[in-house]
Length: 391
Image (cartoon, rainbow, N blue to C red; front, side, top):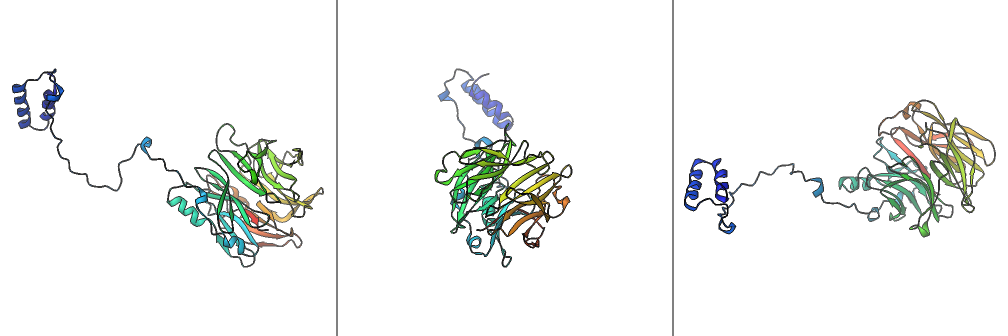
């Protein structure tokens, strides 16, 4: 049989005998012809269905139907930056409780030890509202005039270079969804930023370049150099004519392939290799504020997952010597007068053997170059990253 009423009869059998006989009666009286006009077919109203009881978990929405939620720009927010500019002898640094997905910017006063978090409230707001996943703040750098500082914001969605002034206003210098930024360094004149950049994925993953971004032309492509596969840690000469950085053939790791020091002349574009060692790396070099000395980390492999890392200081063109008590160093910065160095040190040699997404516990200490005394500034209950001394 064909037609609407045949289908109706088939459907109503499961509903009960009474409705089946009714449908068969209609079949007998009106016939069941497949060529019956569609307009003459019987249309029954749908059976009312009670609304389902609301449940806590709604029906999942297919991924293709999910609405696209664009996160607000970071420049829509602000930071409570007053402590960073008002605390005496302030040091800006990154810290984390040990989970690599959490990093915040803090400011510490050397006078009274006061510590203030500048990004904690912003990070919580970004996480709780679902705007950005795993927000991290890293690589702080003070402008030479002390009127603003730059830092890197990283998340699953993007990586950005931002600046903040005394009012807490954020300005975006650079942003990317496909690359990471690190190692920010201001030019002595405050008109340019040097940084490291590399792809987040793809066949070039692990490679990185050192670039210079002129702030008056920040929307143009930066000037970059890449003599080696991995180029990191740029730092300006006091005159602003040269940049010193580290370069190597492998992805940067304290226990990885050796890295050497290079000097990049910004006027002639010439490159000069300063070191060439096969059994150790020279990284994160920094000229003293007066340009008479050079400090850098010497890293030698100590085990499968560990490396010795010591802070060396030299007179420019002279012999370098390791600082006593400055072992297992991870980052450092000169004081504005060049008399002291603040650095971060592993809590113990075994603290570096950290697997997964955790970070080793480090402490921040103050080293006096004349007396050789070391004063701890933080305990070793968290990970402390790159410090930046306010000019």
